[in-house]
Length: 197
Image (cartoon, rainbow, N blue to C red; front, top):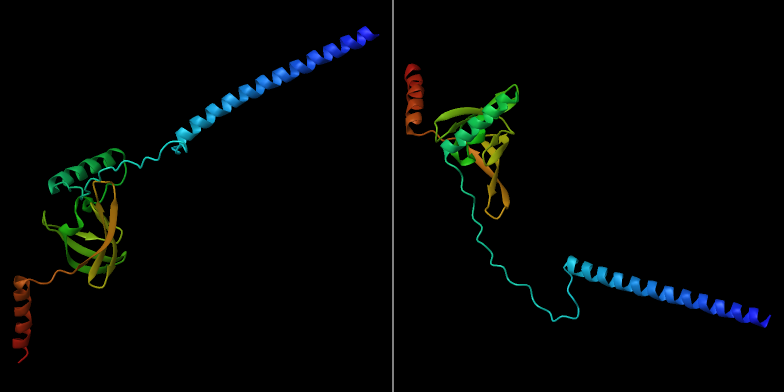
């Protein structure tokens, strides 16, 4: 009986030693894995190692941001023709012809009331063509937002080389009559005055 008790104690001692040994290897194995993953995540997150000397970030030379150049009127007209042809091939509505014009290339000739609302008659100064435009009309560098009284309000967008887009409001007023138009208007009023007496 004593032999059985010794054997049982010896087997229990072996089993407990095996359990302790296997637990130690599992703990050691887990510790090495967690150390490796934490080291990888720290470097991957861009965090700073607290045991290294601080090094300030290197200064990056900022490039001067200028406005992106605008293509010539002929290039913009060619782009518009290509867009119009692509829209026709896709059986989609064609883009407006004003998409080839810059906001500062138009001159307001007149404002009128139509069944659709207020409309403006503008002249494209580089190509000497006139268009009737409504609020919401797109331009190459902006959009007509509103027609108020004797002025048009545009949202003008400037694009810079560093990717920034700056939007501002631009107002254009009716074209003032030049001397030729003023002289044409004057004789009709003077003839009316002369016809009255």
